[in-house]
Image (cartoon, rainbow over all chains, first blue to last red; front, top):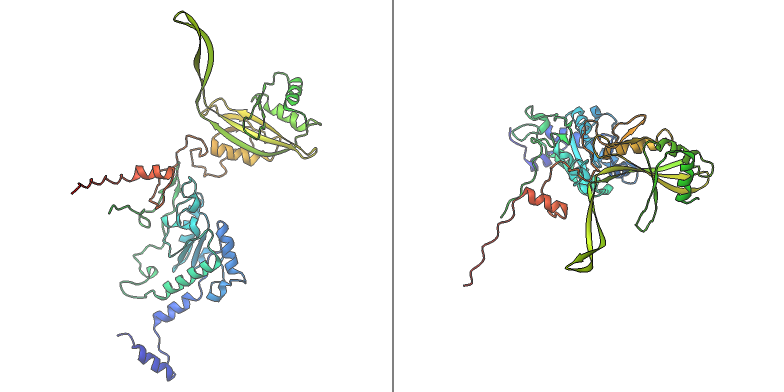
Length: 206
Length: 217
């Protein structure tokens, strides 16, 4: 069956017949009740708390239900510095979340290590171990930035396909849902990054 | 509060055999400290805490210091006969000082509102014999900070009740605050490298080849 013509759909709606697609209904439902996992790592968490509180009110976007259990959460907001000692636990929490699941890397530390990038004890970005959907720069990002990331994630969910070659990652059985948890090594985490998820940027001479 | 010389004299009178040096501080703070020997350190510390006039009942801070092997050059003027004439010549002597680690304690008195009295302990070397007696039995506040020094500098504190790593994971083997520590080589490209990062970047990426000089036409 081909897609319904947009003018025809509007005309039908004017006559009181509401036509939609399963995909649109499914995505509409999911994008408006994203439940984040309730955990914070550093000062970004304070901004995340402010976003959840009355002044910025993430409830306007359907994200107010911060779940204390990864089994009930859809979204992981990595809010703050990920130390190497904490990284295995973050990956384990991600693995424990049920599909479909999304990750927002909030703040300079979570996306790259931030001011601690050259140190020995901070992970240089959580995207070395788990796939990240939305990155927010800032140190820390303002609550508006987190809301913006949240809306970007909603747009991303809205555009996900249920069928076909470009269907969403969680509907493809070949795509991994869990990622290996790094081990504590003698000098560093082992491995220092998951090559299936992360490849360091390459310098190309022009 | 008494001067360090007075404290030193009183300790030496009470604790026979105690070896105490006063370490000068040439910096603007000019905070001198007492270097106490490891064998008598618990007794000296107990005296500092329990003596009624000192009563240093609060250990606010414990720090580690890493001293690498170093050579100290000393110049001395000596008289020498050169070509039959007596002249003053500079003679340079080099003294090799093997490396060691230090633990520094800052002590205050809450009772008398004075302080700090700074005491130091030195390890014999930077490897197997890197151990000093723990002062946690005397000041409970030293417990976590001694664990931190153990973690980051590798000083072992004898008689510490719970000497484990506190910041890094248990499987970790290095001591990151030591001056000869090298962090794992996980450099990745960044647009504005600076200082040490430039050096790392040079190791990881070949230099841009020198452009051929344009011939004047």
